Image (cartoon, rainbow, N blue to C red; front, side):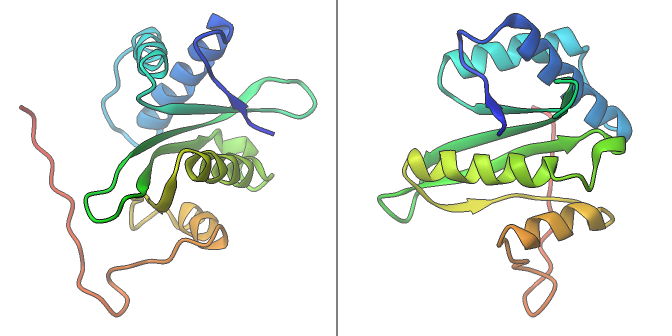
Length: 157
């Protein structure tokens, strides 16, 4: 079972999550603040009840091998909430061993407990392994196959 980080979690848990998220961005050539900054930000966000952070650990060694970050927010269209799986990462040599499934299953259960009736996420077109994980977890692709291709836009402010 994935560990849900709380304000009372050992500092090392937040450091591990920060390192994993940093590694995730580096693996995909995305910019990332240093791991300690990511850990501090996660600590603040969890303390303010803005995100849920889950940490998966190796079953034999207890070493951190995966992380998920979930945001649950009010829906604009229904009285329920919606969940955004903002991040999900498993270290490359642990992929295909059930850690991603463990993280996504736990994240969705926590989202339901917080009143969400809808969950969404975004992944890249090239990440077939992630797409298979999400589809196996019950997510369906809502664009590109029978629907319009959706484009993501970003800009710094």
